[in-house]
Length: 481
Image 1 (cartoon, one colour):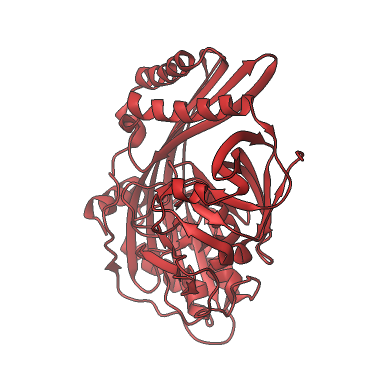
Image 2 (cartoon, rainbow, N blue to C red):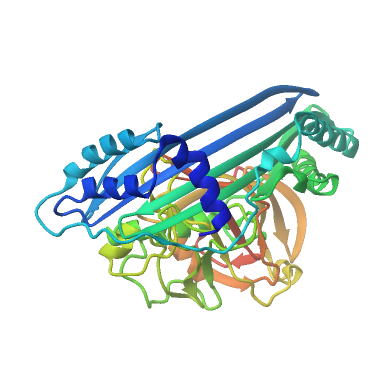
């Protein structure tokens, strides 16, 4: 582990409660009931702050600090878990006594000697919110509003927010692994409302990552504002979306959220171990068109979904899920990897110390192809170009999804002829992969806004893809002719 991260974690969380290596070993001794295969302790201290502006006034600010420890024992596919918001030898002992009840006849927990895990340094260890004082944060919000209002006279409302999180974690496992990580996370968001001839539209944009607030220069936030204003003003002249089956071109970057939801979740280990995923038992089979390569990479520098180590102390890595259309593997946490007799992939993630880990995505994206994006659009006689997405719903078991496009254009004879509103894309994730006809050379990752939900837990993630032409398997829902 990074010595600086380890020292910080020990000073902030363990030392104040007189928790040392002897206490950790005593806790594992309490957890060492017959039949317990695996156990870990997850210490976490999180500092959050947020500021928001509306109607030209900074109307809200928040600040919180939360810390605690989660104690987990695993027996086969059963998990016992308890957590405490006090970090001390006594709270660890109480939690361990509660958790060890999962034990039953069988093997004995193997408790190993302490050994550090050293991951790559992917982000700074400093508090990202401390990079700017309160006055500078307020000034940042006012600058965003000023930039937006100067951009288009049709803007009638601007809303902006700034958020910073400083997360310190320490993982101790019964097998001896010790891992610490210090995780900064920031985000800036802007929403604009425009009005013309009595018609109103709104759109939002933003970005962030694992860096401090000095990242958000005027140049960076101007890019966010431009995207929001362009989408909102484009929709002022949008016509009703057409309906029916047609060729769909997906834009680069954030539209990768469709892959994340409709395909990515189906490649997580738990769904495949239980046989509920459409991809279960299909490693080595063709599941997508030739040229489709999808990876999950937790090692990208400064990205929102990146982690030096996952929430089980495992090193993150770049995991190839689909290569040239062939299914190569799944994203795994420790428990599902063990039960499936596969290697963990550094995808064990949890929302906080009060939650159990499960296999989750980090930064999931499709590799670039060889085609120019303009060439892809020019190849479509009649179809839809989905530039950006809003919300959606997915059934993990079947892979069926419904996504709404927040910005889309009608394509006729290879040209974008007019923007459309109210377009939804309906399809089946595993099936859609088979209809990828052209892959752009313009791979882009999202700007750093993704939050993924699963079984009530939310974690930051990244998505991405190049421009894609989907030749079938998609139905466009709309109210136009």
